[in-house]
Picture 1 (cartoon, rainbow, N blue to C red):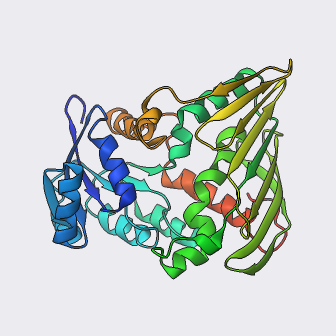
Picture 2 (cartoon, one colour):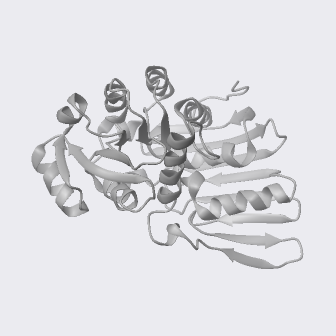
Picture 3 (cartoon, helix red, strand yellow):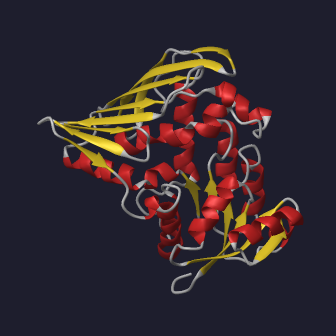
Length: 318
């Protein structure tokens, strides 16, 4: 695909697909040629709103993709099935998270897909996350990381399938919990103390030890409101993300400065432009660029979610 535009078929017609469509129109090297939904009427309405030339059904795309790559952005409960079916076409794929709603389902998709692909953990491509990680490396590496992830599940949207809500930690938590691995590396041990009273009343609390010798704290209360927060610490510096799209840098001399996006993240949903550009590089170079996640890598973050949200003490994740 070197030297020419990569024609992309967008599979999905929901709100997140609309966010991706905005970016796909603008990323150098890509050309958004079609979109697909379950019904032609829905695909046509989406294509008209998003400025996409051709509207098709899922079945039509599976029968004849008419594209160089597939961009999958379907519902959480459908992604595993759709991704496995699309893999049979032999085309490179981008898969929006989540891919599977438990480790076993994720593993089945991982084992079924043999084409070049990338999973959309867009937080790894936030401008402020990347710049913060670079600062941590300059200071000798992360020594500690805290992920605070409240979930007010009683206000969860009704549009989600019941199975998705039951497995919400895999549907909606993986992209934040993945930042443990992105900043601190692979976990070496976990001690969890969790209480689950119901699907909407859960308390997850864990200490994490990493192979890098960094330490982590995870807490997620599902019965209370609050904003997600990630804090990372190195020698003489702390970076606090709250909300996650921007940060405050705190230094040992008492000074503080804001860390704000300055590029594409000011125009699009944060991280989407960067990960789409990474997908282009993956297809051009034949190897994943820094930060890109394939299903083998993604499955490790899903396993970490499973350990952190287990209903018993867990250790030695392997």
